[in-house]
Each structure stands twice: as structure tokens, then as C-alpha cells.
Amino acid sequence: MPKILAVGEISNGVLKKASRETTSVGKRLGGAVDAILLGSGASAGVAELAKHGADTVYVGEISPYNGEAYAKAVVDVVKSKGYDIIILPHSWIGRDISARIATALNTGVISDATEISLEGDRVKIRKPVYSGKAFVNLKLKTSPQVVTIRPNAHPISEAAGAGKAETITVDASSAKAKEVKFEAKGGTRVPLTEADIVVSGGRGIKGPENFPLIEQLADLLGAGVGATRAVVDAGWCDHTLQIGQTGLTVSPTLYIAVGISGAIQHMAGMGSSKYIVAINKDPDAPIFKVATYGIVDDLFQVVPPLKEELKAALGR
Ligand SMILES: Cc1cc2nc3c(=O)[nH]c(=O)nc-3n(C[C@H](O)[C@H](O)[C@H](O)COP(=O)(O)OP(=O)(O)OC[C@H]3O[C@@H](n4cnc5c(N)ncnc54)[C@H](O)[C@@H]3O)c2cc1C
Figure 1: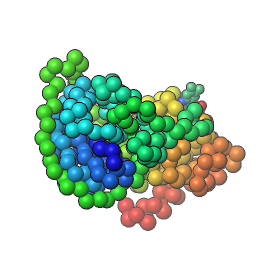
Figure 2 (figure 1 turned 90 degrees about the horizontal axis):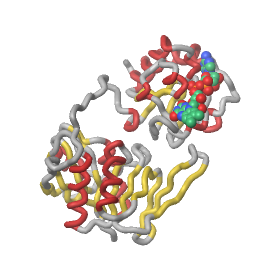
Figure 3 (figure 1 turned 60 degrees about the vertical axis):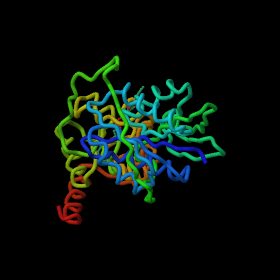
Figure 4 (figure 1 turned 180 degrees about the vertical axis):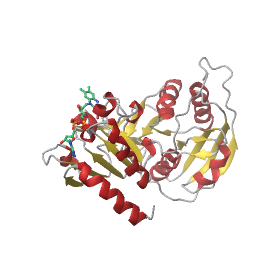
């Protein structure tokens, strides 16, 4: 069996969901998995990762984030312990360090897997390409194999691991690039790429004064808020909410598309959602081709009573 290392993410002792996903995927692939956690309060995540099957968890205390130092710490562990497969989340950190890790190990990287399996000793991934119009299956010829997995696209599973913590040194003192200032966006909503439910608004909402309708529906469901490029370009909401080919890719369990036509470029960013609910007054809107459930009606007639029903049902 190949030796597998799952890379997790933690900040201020709060384990990111992606850490559970990489560890669960590693456990399912290999039968045995170790994990590495770098960040502030890293050791706080060890017990949690053991519940998903992690045997040894390497913990490195470091703050603020530094891509060079993170990547070097992973590479040092891979070289000294001899891992065959390294699994990272396809998050902004994972995207940053996976390429650095692969370069340092003189190997390749396959990224953004929505499906993953093992064929012999080779990892095989599948992911949508060309804005979701086709799928590609990829395998690496080189070793070790570096793979990133799409957040929210892989089930989290329970498995008992030994959860043995091993402290490692992470040193950013010789890094060529350093973080000068980190400005966190305000707000308490769940980050879009981690959200289990996403409520997204399109041009059908007519104007910025109606965007709160989307936000209120999202807040009732504890969901993330997204938007189409049309809405973002019009300045009706912040550009960080854009979902699609030139925005974020999300894979929630439930995606509620409100007043969204379903252009191919938008679907590139949400097509791997498990259930899609579309509210659109045009029965021929392309979004209905991918929707699990469709409501053909004026969103202004549908969303307000839906909010009231949800308030009553959820007791909020
Ligand atoms: C290179 C490139 C990259 C792009 N990248 C992205 C991207 O990352 N993300 C993205 O989203 N787009 C992207 N686009 C833009 C994309 O092609 C579409 O223009 C955009 O997604 C349309 O957004 P929309 O669905 O909000 O608007 P529209 O296409 O205008 O759709 C609005 C929908 O609202 C419905 N509607 C109107 N009024 C109501 C009502 N009262 N009740 C219910 N329904 C109503 C209409 O029937 C219509 O279907 C990109 C385009 C290009 C060329």
C-alpha cells in the first residue's frame, strides 16, 4: 500500500473542513494515512483528525501564513518519512503550496479532483473541464504523487486513527516573500468554498436594493452567499462572491440559484453541486437543464413566502 500524507489547514486552533476531507480521502485510498497540520494552534486539530483515520499528525506552529515555509515543511516530512502520495485541499493555500511541493520533489501535480481512486500504486482523478462540458481522467507518471481535491466534493468519513502528534519545525525566516499585512473580510458567514448550502443571486433580482433578499434567505439556512458575474459587474455585491469560470468554484450539497439563467461560465463554478434548486420565471432558462428541482415563477413572488415558511419550519 502507498504511504499517504494528507495536508490539513488550521487557523487559531480551528480546523478547516478541508482537513477532514483530505484525511478521509487518504484513509479511503490507502487504508493508512498520516496528516500534517501547519498554522496557529496546530496541535488543537490532532484529536479531530484521528477521528478520520490519521495515525501520525505532524504539527508545525507558524503564523502568519508563508507559502515557502509551509511547502518546505511538507517536503521535509515527505523526504524524511518517504510518502508516496500527498493530498491537499484545492483551497488557496493548497493551490499555492502544491506547485511548490511538486517542484521541490521534482514531480508533477494533478489538481482539483472531484473524484479520486487508486489504480495499482497510481492515483487516478476525474474532474470537469471546458466549463463543465467534459470530464478528464488524469494520472501522474512521476512520484511522489501530489494531488489536490476540490473542497466539499468528497465525503468526510469516520475512522479511528492513532492520532500521535509529532512536532516539526516550520521556519519562515529565510523565505524570500513574507506576508506584510493580512486583512480579513468582515462578516460571520461561512466561506463560500466550504459552505454546505449556497444561495446565489443573478440579474433577475433587478438591482442592488434586492440583494438583501438573497442574503436573508442564505442567513436563514446558514448558507454562503454567491452571485453571477452579471451581478458582480453591475456592482450589486462584492466581487469576491462571484461564482463561475472567472470566479470561485463551489461544490455544496445544496445550491439555490435565484434569477440566474445558467450560462455555461456560471455553471463551470457550481455544476458539481449535489442538489441544485433554480428559481427562474423563464421555463426555458438553461439552469433548469441541471436543476434537481425547478420553480418557474417570479422570484419576488417565491422568495418572500419561502423565507416565511423556512422561518416557521426552522424556528428562526
Ligand atoms: C470569458 C467569460 C467569463 C465569464 N465568467 C463568468 C463567471 O465566472 N460567472 C458568471 O456567473 N458568469 C460569467 N460570465 C458571464 C456569463 O456568460 C453570463 O453573462 C452570466 O452568468 C449571466 O448572469 P445572470 O444569470 O445573472 O444573468 P442573465 O443571463 O441575464 O439571467 C438572468 C435570469 O433571471 C431571470 N429572471 C429575470 N427576472 C426574474 C424574476 N423576476 N424572477 C425569476 N427569474 C427572473 C431571467 O429569466 C434570466 O434567466 C463570463 C462570461 C465570459 C465571456
